[in-house]
Length: 305
Ligand SMILES: [Zn+2]
Image 1 (tube, rainbow, N blue to C red):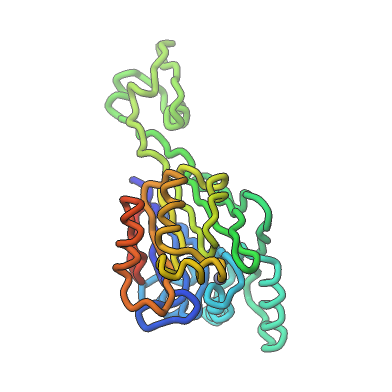
Image 2 (cartoon, helix red, strand yellow):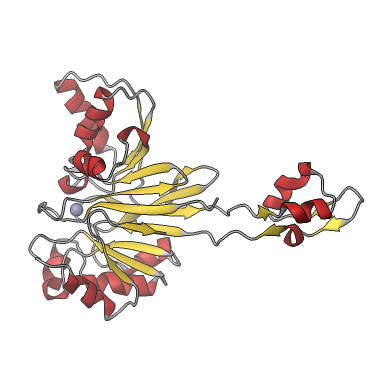
């Protein structure tokens, strides 16, 4: 079974939502685990619309505390509680979010039935914030008007697939299988050395994905995410509003494309579009002049990493 690593866009809008563009949110699925990144105000309806069970989400990552990236979170936690959630939720965020949640729960006299495990994000450098047998997640700083973090998800090496027929031919004991799956040679029952390449097939290459939610054009990103396979980069504006982008610590479509080129990404996904633009085609066109594999994130769209 090839593990799936895919993202679903739940919202692609900037500050003010429009009917076609709910505010920022996306869900990442890796082998049955769900990571929600940002939580715009329409998050609950979006999760229902695209048929994600809210109780399956165990990890929520918030890039920063501008409203369009987190205002849906309080409602989502409330619904998890009302629907009987018992299992802990992991929340990766700036420390001030805990103050906001505590205040809301105190004033509304809400006592959640589940605990929140907070992982506070470091403002200065790249840090490992999650690791299990399949995946590592790092946070890294973005340059925005307030503290803001991006996230880098990296798959760990996948196991080699055992060819059972060959395994029998070489008279290898099943206790050696775990070594072969890791790509290590073994000794068979007759004391003969068997190369893992003889009895396994190689897995597909591991994949990586980076999210740069809200950021000014910043070539320093190369230090954190060089060589990433898929880059999601905000593109709030087109180049005609380059000055406004700079002033508000946002990026344009061509700036996002320049970053994709600089870090040798294979695929660029643009998102976080200002409501002032009616159509998104211009974003794709602008970026495509610089970088050759560009997608424009639309609500409900799924991307295989
Ligand atoms: Zn922002």
